[in-house]
Length: 294
Image (cartoon, rainbow, N blue to C red; front, side, top):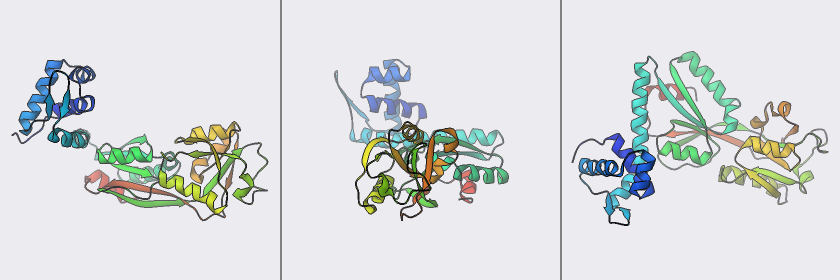
């Protein structure tokens, strides 16, 4: 058994473990089937275990292969990130931070963070990727991002979570809607309206929080559409297909761009919570410096 794993072989195993078909995996990897077979054999030799059971018709993972499949994405992500950090440091930078975020975090929180970090640490590079809450957790677990901005309450180990912003919700209605900030009193005024909401796929915690607003108002909403994208929700509202409830920060400057009006929900108990998430076992100088500002 060797004391190292070849990254190329590991990535090939990832694809094969997903496809369980040598021809399809080889086509995805742009290599020949014999070439892929040799890579998998070399990986098995390096590890000193059998990863696959093969016959003329089927490819199955051994128990070792099943376990490696669960760890391969994390391991390849970790190795790729390490190589990337080394190259960035060699280029004269302190390192790179890969950030996942839900759309509302980019309205104010992330720009303020980057301004402060850039002023103090100008040689830290940032890479941004807008992702759903669930996708951020998966990316953290697979070492594909270093820091996430989510609307979640609980996260699995070894991920840590810390709330950093609490804000009010806002009602979003079409520009010509009869309910306006001047005559709005309670959400019950809209109980006969169709609602457009963020899908529970966005965050079950967030979705349940929204539904509790209706529960407190003692009516069950008619949900006409769901989406995980704020712009989609705003466009549907603009076209008269319903009204929406969203975190207020998502609406900043939106009224100028599209025909909607925003009403802050001052008198409800619910608040939209934005949190940061990161891996407990993730440590490198650039990340530790950025965490100071959070």
